[in-house]
Image (cartoon, rainbow, N blue to C red):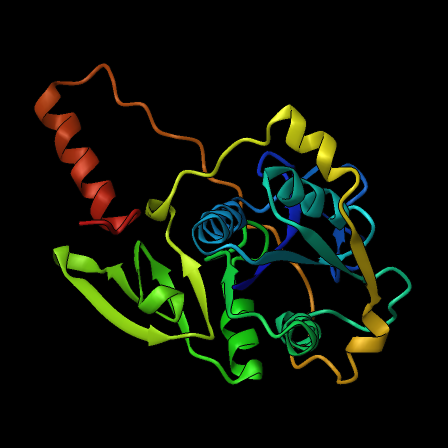
Length: 259
């Protein structure tokens, strides 16, 4: 079985976001980066699937040279090789459509049996690159899957998705397909020291974004804006409790509009 994972290198969740002058971009000067947390569940499920059915696993990441850090972590966890779509020197804008288009060309070349993608990203939070890659590849996608039962010696599967009210949706699908795991599907492993050492020797193929992205982006970013600062909290004291409760309820209705 050939398994492909989509992974993204994202700003650390504790990063303080600053907007560049002009408001059309983010100032990344002081950013620290990390593996997108949801992608770790995709990596783990890919490794477990490979352990079950053998074959080969490939991790794909789009970005500048720092994106290789995410690829190396996947290799340290146990994946076989990486594909880095290098965006350095790429003059065009990158939206979800452009990224999915570039990845889809790698998919067409690799011809995987199954693709695992993170459910979402902590930076943009769109969650649409995986489904778009599946659409470009002409394969089905199962999103937010919390349980997988492989069938027919890995040629098909039964997937479950939890929805509101305790309801479970059940899907049956044939390979090839794309799966975006829910965090309940597995517990991502930590890379071992031997795995980290082996990862240094595993191959990472480089592809230029300019060679893969031949269409203009479909999303235009006009400006970024930080959310308004929260007003300071109000403290009620020095009055009878009944009077303060009445005042709090009044403010919850008129200002907070939560009741």
